[in-house]
Image (cartoon, rainbow, N blue to C red):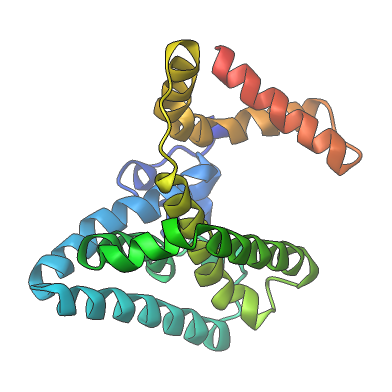
Length: 232
């Protein structure tokens, strides 16, 4: 499997996103690198500048806008690709995680607004999020992402806001699990990220041995790889 090729020290200290060749070893770990750098850099800045409610929101909005501006500059000043040149660049993607921090702050500092959005008006919020997602999906596939201004700038912000809305909505649903259903949900919750990190290598192996001819066969291959990982 390709996961054993080009093993490098950079991947062990989360520097793999700075050189595309490093990602030949464990390529899906690009997101892990973004996450770890976020945990290292953002809390330090947070502790230095965030003192109260006002400074919290100023900080979050500023980070989101700054990273969007950085992607805009990157689009005009570089000829890099959408994938490695933007999507996997650590210092162009931290705003995606800060958007989650922003909504956690809304819940903490302005719980009344949070409750209105995700409990009282949850149907309207859900419909809005679904419409945005349905508009997003075709735009993702119809544009040339390497040359599209939208794809390399605003697309990342939009999809992050869409999914954090779904996360907040799901939090509002209170239900109790017991027995086997609780065990299954707990197991998936504990293992899902680990499965995400390793599934791509198994899927690549399956596709190499059994090439797919259409999207249906691709989906079947993906499902089989996930089932295999969970079984073993």
